[in-house]
Image 1 (tube, helix red, strand yellow):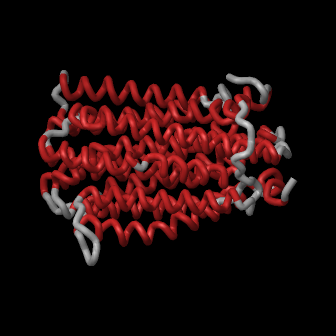
Image 2 (cartoon, helix red, strand yellow):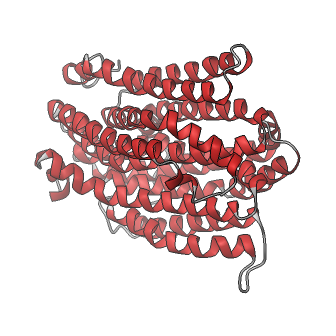
Length: 456
């Protein structure tokens, strides 16, 4: 057993968790800056461009969260469990199986978005120029879906070994590239052509393609604990080791993103300005996911390694420590946004109508952001433990509250946008509270401690 694995098993929990999480949190802050920068550049093109990108953004985040946090969590968990149990050759084989899954899922996203994307954006309220922007941006981004899936999957393999620094370094280095290339392609600066909103998509795909190539070179060279080789025979058991955690995780991300897609559809009929304001405000909500992922990736690795070694009580202590940190982080961001929404909204627009919608959203939903951190951290820890029943039920509860409550408020109670934003806040509280109460009552973690080899 390597010294790095031993530290995950025996090191003090808080320092070890913070050491692992720090590079990831930095990465997610950088990615948040990249996402915000992209929205700023698109905002220069006007409200229609912001509204069009707002329609596509939930589906991009679905792909991102599914590949990095859903299926990616399954990859990292499987690799960490194998290493925790001293099975390094199995960890090598798991990396190749993960790549096969990534290629298939990337191709599936491309085909689905190109075939059904315009109809989905129209159903969400896209009309005229807004729908044209959404279709253009979506075609470029999802045309490169395999790059997103490969990058996030290979990064998950590396994180599963306990190496958080390499993915962090690649993201930070790539951020400088995208923040330079994206505005140049959007506006046609210097020698670059003016591509408009398509330029932001081209820069994003280029970023993930280059990052995937760097990770591929690292893993095939065998410089870490896992060596990626394409010579391994594909085995159903190893696919299952990934999918038994990754598939429920992917389903959980689908539920979360369907909530946002449905809510975006409820906002659409209120017009382009409302859609743009909601899109800018909701972008901050979405950015809580990658921020929590910074802590969550460390939780997956630490919990999975300890579960693989049979240290279930320690895995439980790690779970609640990480959940407290994540809830404090996202809760603080939400409260700041609620008190001073223009610190965020002012980055993207000066339009009074757009700002009014964004302020209303952040005033109401911002205070509920702490529930995002709480629920997601417990979800990531559950991935590491290999038991996702309660997080899935909590995600379903959030979806039901968002869809049913949103429909009632908009179509029956005439609650308008403010009423819809209250529904969003309640749905977040339901998600975080359901997971926390269930796990605190040991509905899941007791089964992990008492019968680690059994499903819920």
